[in-house]
Structure formats: C-alpha cells, structure tokens
View: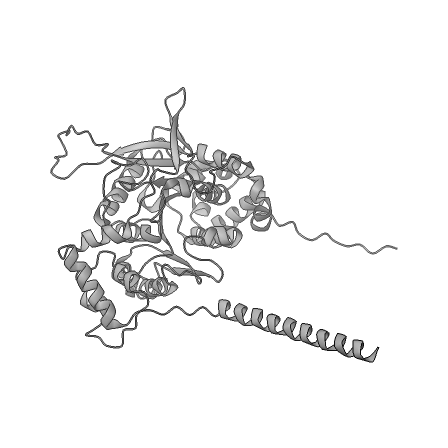
Length: 454
C-alpha cells in the first residue's frame, strides 16, 4: 500500500506542477497581450519613405493624398428608393457589413434609414462656366440626405455631418438619427464625389474636391426653403442661417469641416477622431528630436490636410472628441488641434473650446462605444452655443411667448436656458432602443418624500 500511495503522490505532484506551469504560462500570455507597445519608425526612415512616395507620384501632394486617404466602399452601403410622390429615401444595401443578414437590428436600422430624404445638389466640373450647362455622361451631383428635427424643427439647429474614409452615408444613418432624436436637431449628411451615389463611380476624390462639396452643401442648406419646417412667407424664417449650422467632421471629414469653418462663420464645429496633418498619419508618432530631419517640417509646404494650422483661424466654438484606444489616428492629433483651438488669441473668450476623451473608444466609434456619454457631451456643447436670431423669432411666435414671456425676456440667455431645461424634462423617449439613455438624460424624476408612520 505504501508503494502505491507513493506512486499516486508522485503522479499527483507531477500533474499539479504541470497545471501550475500552464497557469503561469497563460498569465504571461495575458500580460503580453495587455502590454501592447506600438513601435514607430525613426525620423530618417520616415523621411526616406515619404521622399520615395512623393517621387513616385511626381511630387504631387494631391495625388499622394488621394492614393492613401480615400477608399470609398464599393458597392455602397445603401440603395435609393422612390415613393409614389416622387421623393427618394435610402434603404439598407445587401452589401452593408453590419446588416447583411436580415434580423431584428436590421429592421430597427431600416426605420432610421427611411427617416432621411434624399436630395441632389449639382456641382460644376473643371472648366465649366456657371451660366452654361455641360452635357456629360457622368453624374454631376452630390447626394444629400436631410432629416428634420422630430419635435420642433423651427427652433432646431442643423448638424452637417462629414463621414470618415472607408464608409459612406449608409454607415452613419443610425447614429445620426439617434442624435437628431435626442438633441432635437435637424441632420444633414452627404457623400463626397466618388462615394456612395455622389458623382461618378470612377471619380477620384481629393482634399480640395471634398472641401468644395461641403461648401456647396452649406450654400444649399442656407438657400433652400422649406427645410426648417414649412414655408411661412418670410425668407429669413424659412431657411437656415450660417449661425444655425454645426459642422461635424469625422476622421478624414475633419479636413473639409475645419477648412469651411475657417472660411464661414458657422455656429459650431465638432471634430471626431480628427487628424492634425496627413503627414503625421503616414509616419505615425515618429519622434521629432531633430528639426532638420523631422518629416512634418520637411513636407510642411506639401501638406494637404493641415488641420493643425487651420485650427487657429476657426471662427466658431469647437468640440474635440477622440478615443484613447485609437491606433489608426493617434489621440495626440486631436490634442494638437485642441491646443491650437485654445490659442486663438482675442477670440478665446468668444469662441470656447471643449474636449471629450473616451478612455475605451477606438477609431470612429466614440458614439457606439458609449452612446449615453457621447450624446451628453454633444448636448452640452450645443446648449452652450448662442441663440440665433431665427431661433429667437421662432420662440417669440410660439406658444411659450404667449404665456407671459416678452421680447426682453426672450433675449435673456439664463431665462432661455431654464426654459430649455424644463422642456427637455417634458420630452418623451422617441426610440425604445435607447430608452435608458433618454431616462438618464432628459427626465430624471425627483425622489419621493418619505413620511414616517405614526
């Protein structure tokens, strides 16, 4: 018996030792997976690679940006359908990466898609005069998707969303619909030429063409009547003003949004996962110890997306959002833009700058990582924007003004803020999918009074 017991003890000790070794090995693997260190190239290597790339495209920065920056999804993630009245609306494409299979989520998303209405904005080709129409086989129009505010469109602002690189409007309809419902704002999304249904399929977008597309979209939004919520006969009330527009640039969409914000005095600017410059994205976070060998300094004149330099001339309040786990565009890009926005000199008090750093979000998923917090941050930013003349006129003509608010009271921002807070508490959830978000954001019921029993 003693021999058998000794053998059993030896086998048990060997098995336990193997178990401990496997356990320690798994722990080491978990530690190695957690400690991910991203190594970036040196200055000399980055300088040589960029020099060869510029020589390959003939020292044309526009061609280099087009090759590396723009990758439109083909086929597009949405299709267009026409109603009996002639209006068009988007539907989910069978090639959409998220909703390829029909399920409950696809049915919910289809409602968000159908809530947008499609418009077409013509754009001029190179060498075409404004007064002449040029006949061409190409499709010379920009697809624009508009969604009015669900509750009070006459008093709502307009958010113009510029999407990211490897996506089109079909990848953002669900997010934008939820933001429009929660914030009670109108939404306008568009595709750059070469993306989705805009332009020709073989059009190659450039940085300048994207900025020109956004300029035409802003001009169309400020001239088109009926978007605000019906025509009243007053031209100023039937259209959005520049101060009613908030530009939202996502990833590569931060380029045209920042550029247009420096040219026009819009109401606000939101930058999500923005890039400080195209060169910094290509070289990663290469160190800049030597000023002569720094690729950012050597190719500064060839820079296409210089958001860091344009941020100083932005003429509106701004909100910067970025995920701290973004490995495509490092969060240091947004921090550089944030520092430039804060250092705007005399306009610092007039144009305030806000930031939201998500600790768990990656690239282009700041909203999907934490919808409640993202909506809260955007809501705070929109509420800090000054009340425009069109919104003041809409408030004056509403039932609120008839209940004792004079024109002087309406001009008081503190009183308007209290009215907005009271109205937000009265709002009901629009979408059952984010019912919990609505409860935490808008109407938190006060605690009930506790009475002691006699």
